[in-house]
Length: 220
Ligand code: AMP
Image (cartoon, rainbow, N blue to C red; front, top):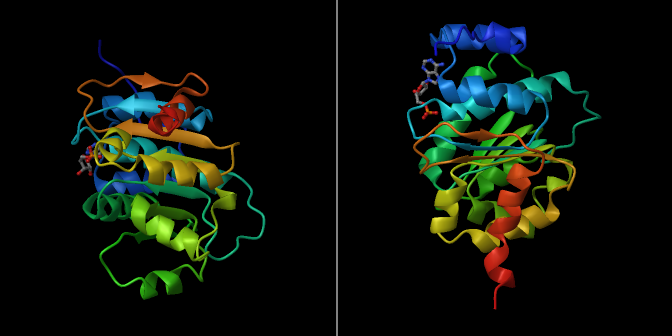
């Protein structure tokens, strides 16, 4: 079956549509056509899509829309509204680049952090406004421990390639993050290994994913 879905029919804000057009995208990929409306509707999302299917835009575009259209109280430095957790520094850099590309006409700020590099520039950056934070789990925990990042304002949480993060042994780290982000949040968990384009917008679907991330700790 062919679809006639366009980016404008997905009701994304005009500054986002402009950035997409500049990136040369004409139509949404299948994962985008399925995921974007679900995230815009405010539901949790558990999606499976292989790399190269456009999954990054599938979650970054609606997140940018949500953040740009929701009223925000006085933003505080180092207190992001969206946290995107990723397994590797390469993916972190790539995802933040996408956020910057698609959000170039929006008054939103983003930051990427990962380990293995000097932490001082990250301390400095966290003294400014950061709306969207893309991070690997380990370095995020360093900042949480030093109280240089405040996750109490998280409205949207994304566990990008959550299955890979679990494979890499990040369960405990993810659990510690989940313990401090507000319970009333939107969660997305686009998977890495999936070969299809399943989306599941059932309320709590990704919450269940998040909870299962902590299961081994409760196991005997
Ligand atoms: P990803 O699967 O997120 O790694 O994206 C793979 C590549 O597809 C990236 O280089 C994107 O820039 C590109 N891309 C994402 N969405 C679209 C689209 N709707 N049309 C054309 N290219 C896209």
